Image (cartoon, rainbow over all chains, first blue to last red; front, side):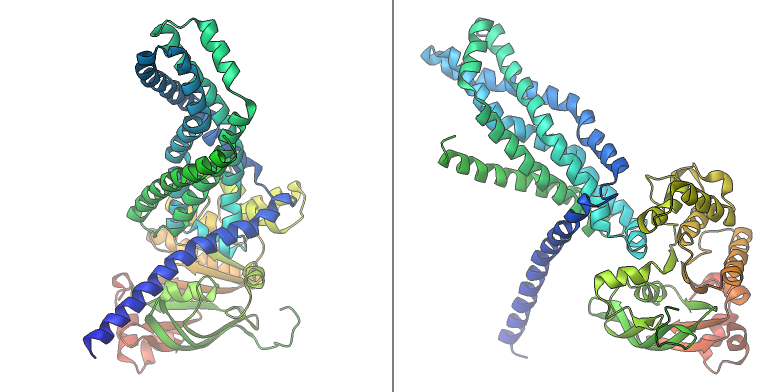
Length: 267
Length: 258
């Protein structure tokens, strides 16, 4: 065989491999979509699992979300104040902190915390189930693993993340306020009324909408890589890593896209 | 039997089957049938593809070539929904039990009943207790899988596989990791299940002790020729097989496997 032919064969194989890699996530998305209608059937959502994941993603994540958001708000407050004092415009710290927290850092911090807490847990859990042949056992019982295992996680995340984002938003604004009041000597009442004046419900809602999109991405990435895990301990570790890297990547891509989209509609 | 045209006593028919991973073929030209009510062993050294063959028989993997008919219907050609329905007619017991870690033993056994029957909770409870008693785990219903031993997990997995009273039972290495006494007890249990329920049993194993004590017939998979070296009664094959590999395998110490 000529060198050129060998080269072409290699190119062809690479292309086919790449195509395979694209097909897998699509297949997974298709399976999830196909399972969605079962949510509305009797016994459709496994309440017990749903409650477990709601606690894992929701209430148990609340303390860390509050702490991280508070710190983030404080950090934003300091950075904003350092620049704004140059113009004697300290009071605008309230604007900067308020808008960045509601539109960006609230949803983003919650997404990053839940990627670490939930996304990686989903991947490791499904990977371990694969090692233990639990997924095969589900299949041979005639139960669709995707519907059975993904839906409780998905619904729990869809509910938990927007609520956490609201808490994160409030904590972030208080973080900025704490800095404004204590370091910049802005009177509390002034900072507060400035915050209330500039922020509106729509801004907050758009941030919450982001968190809904992020919750989808984190759950799907976690579950997808969990199902892709090879049946060994290293495979489980790899799938958890891939899930975290992929979900942070997609969350930031989606954040960028949504931010651009929002700017078109004037927000 | 579902009352269709298939009146033969063969529960599983395998025709010119090739199996493997990706493009690599591990076994080819497999042709055999498994009869109603028999205990059939899939036997071979480690890595010969016997577990893989079982996963093809239960419809988890797609063969590279050939056909598998179960209860007279091809599981290879069946669309996914139909395949899932066919799967509900058999019980599969996995090497490690494959119990769901977040559920107690009782809940594990109850799961298929909750999914596929409309039985009231009391009836499900009764069936669960019955199945756990059958595998000697009557007092362990409230334990989590992580709290019990490997042998108990296997038996609990068996109880779950029996929940829907399957006509066909598959065992993947039932005695692997068990001490000789526990393994002999499990063999007795498998035989009594066949005798009591009239189920057809397919066992993947490399343990000669259990093959000689319970299997009616075996298929012996020889990885050096990538196909079946012999099919028949293991006791007869041990004495009279014309195939040197078969004879040496069956006459060797079972623990050494291949």
